[in-house]
Length: 305
Image 1 (cartoon, helix red, strand yellow):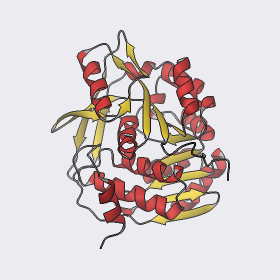
Image 2: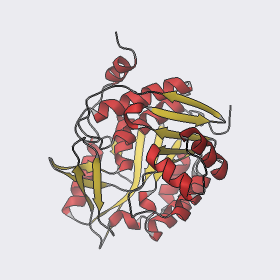
Image 3: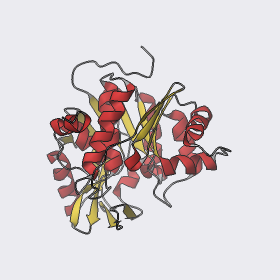
Image 4: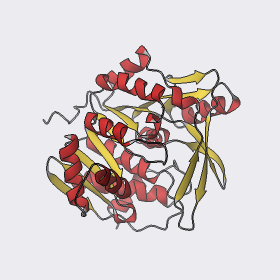
C-alpha cells in the first residue's frame, strides 16, 4: 500500500480540521460557515467522527456557534474561547449567477488558535487532518498549525484564496508539507504563475506544482465542468453533473468532503471523483453550504435510471 494511503483502523473515519468557524451573513440571513465546518458537516453526515480545532469569542455569537456546530454532529471539544476577540462574522454577497464574494473581518477569534496537547493528540489519532489557507493569515494560528502538522498521518491542504488574506511564501510552505492539495482552477493558475510557471494548460500547471512542491496528489475543481485528480503522475477527470445552481457557497467544501470520504475508503480514482462531483453539485443546487444531502441522492445522481 502506498505510504500516502491511510489504512482504516475501523469502519468509522476519524477526521479533524483546523481553522475558521464563523457566521456567514447571507442576503437571506445568518448561517453557520467556514470551510472547515462546511467540510466536516458533510463528512459527519456520511458517518465520520469529526472534530474541529478553532476559536470563538466569549460572546452570544460564540455560544450560538458552538451549538450550531454540535447540531451538525461535529465535536466542539477543541473550540477555544478568546477573552477579547469577537466570534467571526463574514458578509457574503451573491452575484447574478449565485457566486459568492466574501468580506472577512480581521482580526477575529480564530486568528488566535492555540495548539493544545489534547488537540495534538486528536490530530495524531485522525485518519486525515485538513487545513486551509485562510486561517494562516495571522502568526498565532499559523504557529499553532505548524505545531500540529508533525502529528498528522495524512495532511490535506485546502487552498481557499480570499484576497488579501494570503501570502505566497506561506502557501508554498504549506503545499510542501501537505500530502494532498486541493485547488479550484483559478487558484491553481494564480499560484502556478506566482511560482514562475511558463505553462498555460491546466494539466501542465498541475504537474508543475506537483514537481515544485513534491506533492504526489493534487485535485483541481472546475466548477460545473467537474474536476481533475492527479496521483503519482496519472491524471483522472470527471466532467461534472448538470444542475440548476442556487448558490456556490460551500460547493467546493462539499466536493472535498465527498472526495476524502471515498479516498479513505480506498475507492478507485474515477469513483472518488464521481462521488465528490455529485455531492458538490447537489450542494450547489441548494441554498447554503451545508444542506442535508442523502446518500441515496448522491447514488441517484451517479447512476441515474
